[in-house]
Structure formats: structure tokens, C-alpha cells
Image 1 (tube, rainbow, N blue to C red):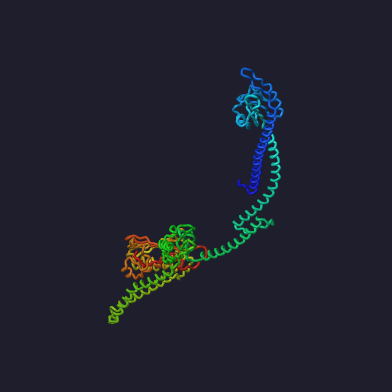
Image 2: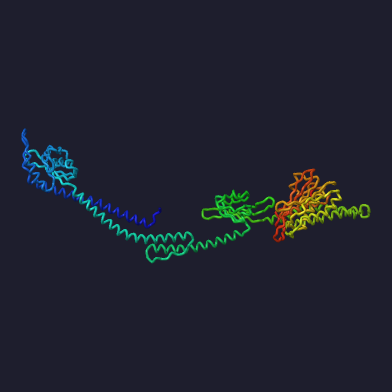
Amino acid sequence: MRLNLFWKFAFAFLALLVSVLLAVDFFAERSFRTDYERIGFEQLTAIARIAQARPPHWTPASPGQPEDLAPLRDWVSQMASSGARVTVIASDGRVLADSQSDPQTMENHATRPEIQEAMARGDGRSIRHSVTINRDLLYYAVRQDSFGGPSAVLRFALPLETVDEVLSSFRHRLWLASFFILLIAGAISMLFSRSFTGRVERLEEFSRRVAEGDFRPQPRDGSGDALEALGISLNRTAARLDRTIQTLTEERNLSSAILGSMVEGVAVVNGSERLVFANPGFAEILGLDVPPTSGSALVEVVRQTELVEAVRQVLGGESRVQSEIVTGTLRQHFFAITVASVRAGDTIGAVVVLHDITELRKLERVRRDFVANVSHEFRTPLTAIQGFSETLLAGAIDDPQNRTRFLEIILEHSRRLARLTEDLLMLSKMDAERLELEIRRLSVSQLIESCLETAQRRAAEKDLRISVNAPERLPDIAGDRRRLAEVLQNLLDNAIQYTLPGGQIVLSAATVGEEVVLTVSDTGIGIPQADQPRIFERFYRVDVARSREAGGTGLGLAIAKHLVEIHGGRLWVESEIGQGSRFHFSVPLFDSEPPTPRSSSNSTGGRGNGSGPQPS
């Protein structure tokens, strides 16, 4: 468990006190022992001087005569009254007399350090353990030359038990006094450290609150010390930090609101080609399901090589790069790219701005296609009208047999020009997204009946049979009656025009999920597989000559596809050569909520090159 500041103070104080006591104990023991040894040796030296002043009366024995040691024993007994152990040792190391042991049982003392030192210098000292009496002793030995024979050594000793007893008593009193000092000092230091750590913990809690966003000031404690000054400084820092964060938050919210509301896509890329920021418009333009996260690699998010290359050029040193990209397949979108370099110190990055220029490109394409298609489609009828008019003016007007035929041809081509003009105006409205729809609740059976009546007359002229295969009760659909009738009528007209006499056309309807699918099937010549993906393009014809003979404008299926898609449905074809064709289109079911008018701006497709009536 993490120790708080209070217990750290307590442990530090305890460790300091114990360290002081151990140091006092160590140095006191050495001091006492040194003093005791010094006093002991001084005492032994004084006893030795007295002994040398009154030496024993002893004469060494003659060769072959027993030695009389009684005078030495008496002298040793008298000297032992001083409290010291007294030993007389011959020059050869034999113990002649001892005040505490029998000399006969004692070993030779020639190797004792104090004896050797005394024989060499006159006196000697040592502190060692006595094997004879099993005690630690202070030894002091002097050489005595007054015996009238060989020299002898007088040795005096004092035990060390006294100093051990004194040290033990001192140590006991020292630790006892230290214990009481520890209690008193501990209580005082506890109160101090408790107050100190409490203030530090309050400052720590204040710092934690500031880190979590709580900038309320810390109240002053009035102590006037460094901790109070620290608290005042932290209060000022928190106040400045609060103001700074509020300013940065307001600026960030403002920037986020601006970037989030921009239709242009904006992104920031760092020097490692990783996204630092991207607004929702950037993700929407690139067709991403979710906005890219910060730190994502640019090549993992962006699939447009032009955009990646432009960013790399700016990161490589160029200050500004402009380019253009295209997204989508069915509905293409065009975006102008502007990549600018940004620097922050040694860090380099790039700001990417994607501006939608789809409308501009669409208008350019509509104008270009209109000029090209109109000039192409208008050439034949205008040439025919001009040619037959010049023929009539040249004199054919007086020819009753050819005059009527020439005027009928001029009338037919003028009608074709009118139909072409009307279809072009319709597509123009669709391209400009100005085609308004009146969405109403519509009965499928009524829609079929309104178109079937007109188709029946034309089918009868070509000996074709038209049948209807639809349930009695179909759910109502949501759509513009007039526009959906144009779609169905166009598909029926195509089936009639490109089905050989004696063939059959079937108009069917069925509910599929949340839609009603209407199908026009025929037994015509069919459409080649290679041409099926392009039959909904404007002015595209599988059989150009036959389509123009039938009076087609080349725009019927393009208009039909666009009308179906702005209703929220789709139009597709299934066909085989020699087996006929099946054109399907779907319309959403009517919702219980009140319908709202829709325009072609809700379209999901149909902006391709379009198509006219096709052979089926």
C-alpha cells in the first residue's frame, strides 16, 4: 500500500532517532571501554610500582636442591589484597606463584605477549582471555631483576567484567530515556506532520480537481508559510488556466461549427501522411460510411490517386497544388482539389480542401450534349424538309400526284422535330432539377387501364395481342399519375414498334417487398447482350435506321429511366435475341403519411447519355 506523507515523516523521524541512539551507544561503549582500560592499566601500573618497591625475598634454588617458594606465595597473597591478580613468572616462562591458581596446574607463560614484551622492554601490556580462570583480563607485566639470580616477571591483572556491567547499565538507562524521548517527540512530530500532511493533501486534491476541470480556488489557511504561498500560486495558475481553456474551447467550438457546416471537405494531413483532422463534408465527399479517425493513414482512407499525389507533392516541398477528382460511377461528382502547405516550427503538414464543382461540370456537359445531340438529330428532318420544300418550289407544287406526298413527308418530319423538341425540353428540366412531381395515392389498375386503351388501338393495327396479368387487389403506389403513365406508355410503344405482327405483349404487375413491380413483356426480336447496358443512354439506338423509320427520338428510355428513379424506383431490362424482352420498373408503395411533392433533384440516376425507343 502506498505510504502517505504522514507515515513517511513518522518513519523518517523513527529512523533518525534509532540511528542517533545506535551511534551514541556505539561511541559511548568505545569511550567507556577505552577509559576503563586506561584507568585499569594506570591502576595496575601503580600496583606494580608498589610491588617493585617491596620485592619478595626469594632466592632461586641451587642445582640439585629443592626450590623454596613459600616467600613468593606470601608476597603474592599480600599483593593480591589490592584487588588485582598477581602472578610471578620465571624467565623461562614457569609460573612460580599465582594469587588465584595453583602454579603447578598452569602452563608455561613464555609465549604470552605481555611476558615477551616485559622481558624485552622491561614492561608489557595486553588484553586477552585467560585460559586458566576463563575470564577477560587486563594484563600488566614488569621485569624484576632484584632476586639475586635470573630475572623474573611480576604480572598483575584486573578483570573486564566491571566495564561490561557499567556499559550494560548505561545502555539500559540510555534506551529507557530514548523511549520516553521517542514518545514525547513522536507525539509532537505526529501533530506537526499531521497538520503538514493535511495541508499537502489538500493541495494535492486541489491539483487533482484542476486536472479534472474544476477550477474553484483553494481557501487560504493563514499560516503565512511556504505552503500557503504555494496554494496562492496554484490558485492564480488555475484561474489563468481556466480563462485560457475557456478561450480555447470557444475558438474550438467556433471552428468546429464552421468546419462542420461547410459543404466543402476539409482535412489536415501531417508529414507522415496521416490524417490529423477531417470534417463531415470530407467523409461525405469520399463516400465514407464513418468519418476517418485521427491518425488514420491517408492511403487507407482516400482511394483517389490524384488527391494522394497532390498531398505528397505539397509534403515534398511545393507550397500549393490544385487538381480535380471524380467520385462515383452512376452519379459522378466532380471536385476541385486545393492542397496547401502548413508549417508549425519544424513540423510540416498539408491542408486539403475539396470543392464541389459537379453542378458546373453538369451544366457544361448538358450544354455540350445538347449542342451535339440536337445538331445530330435535327439534321435529318431539317434536310428532308429543306429538300422537299425546294423541290416543291422548283415546280413540283404543280404536280398533283407528288405534291401531296411531299407535303406529307414535310409534315411527318416537322412532327418528329416537335417530338424531339418536347423530349429535349423534358430532359433539360430533369438535368436542371426543375421537374416537379405531384406525388399522390395512385391505383395500379387505373394506371394500367389508362395506358392500355391507347396501346390496344396501335397493337390492333399490327395484329398484336395485349394481355394483362395482375392480381385483382394490388396495394396503391405513391407517384405522379401523368409521369408514370408516360413511362408505361413508352414501354408499351416500344414493345408494339419492335414486335413483329402476330406477336404478343403481356403487361403484368406484382408486389415485391415495399414496391410494386410492373413488367412489359413481348415476343419481339430481343436486344443483344452487348447493347443492353447502353440502351438507356440518350440517343443510343441498337438499329439506327429502323428506329428513325419508326419515328423515335432516341430519348424515350432515358426519360423513362429518369422518371422512375426520381420516384424512388428503378428500371431494368431482360432480353434474349429471338426470345423477346421484358422491361421492369418499380414504384414504392403508398405511405400512410401525407405525400410531399418531389422534384428531379431527388433522382438517384438517369443523368447518362439517355436513349430513345429501342427494338425489343
